[in-house]
Image (cartoon, rainbow, N blue to C red; front, side):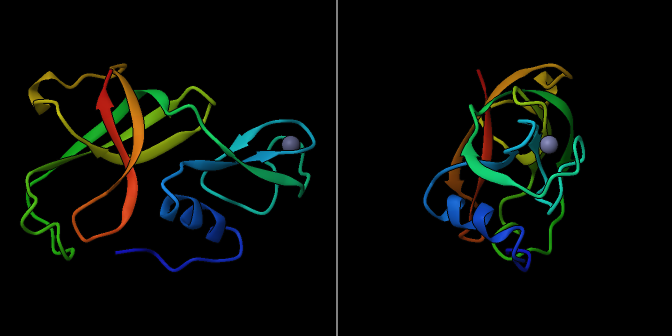
Length: 129
Ligand SMILES: [Zn+2]
């Protein structure tokens, strides 16, 4: 399931469809910004480019989902959603794979990739490094 795109978010979804994780970066001051928005919160400039991110980050927080009404995810429970502090200074949300939730901790190094998740959409997926 994908949230409706807007003029500000369509390039994000297009990049995921191409298997890339791209994020807005202000062309005036270089600040990365996510989620997508029309104006830089650091310098208030409207200029930006969609650039690939490193994929490197650390776990900020997580939740283990045991019930989901979302198509495709109903059978995927339990699954772990993490918020990740990316090396670029932004925070992203995605699935965590290949780790027992009992071993999860704040600051765990992870790396993002783009994968098709339950429900059939390409999304950021994180794995421990
Ligand atoms: Zn800026």
